Length: 184
Image 1: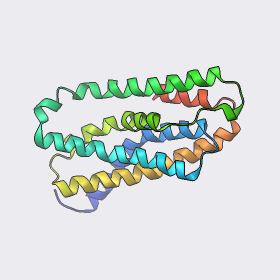
Image 2: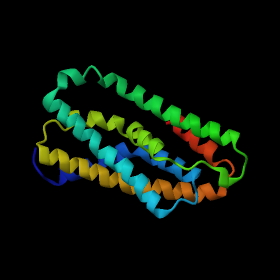
Image 3: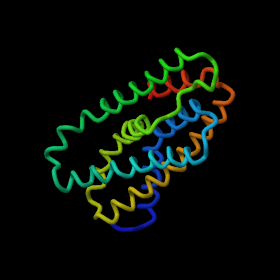
Image 4: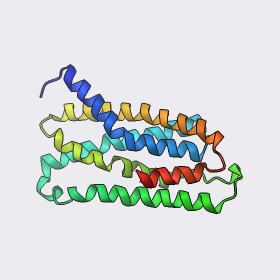
């Protein structure tokens, strides 16, 4: 493979496609916590971007080292993501139903939940490592960085959208966020 404009265009488009799950979850997080500090928004978007970059690199590494062991695991990837998002969404939904309509009682997003969200939304990016198997290490890393940058920008947008609507839907935000995660 060669470095050209198509490489960068394809990387950006791939990043957009991969970031849609993370965008939806970011929106749900913004709905859940409408008064979120900017530093926390950067942390959330950064976490999603990190995992969206890490997973293709893991997939690329597996293709170059242990592909015969990894292909047996590939059909399970969507089911693992489903289980993780359903658990997180179900917990948000249950917490939203149990709490009263006072927005101060809304649960804040913890590091553990954020890690699970990052893994769940990026696990499909693991298979991207197979599609970039022809790339050398530098090109695969560059693709991962582009995917991360695109994901970061898209997730910041999702958080801002969620924040905007979260202030309007504060009494139902956690329920809506949980339903969004389950539907993904």
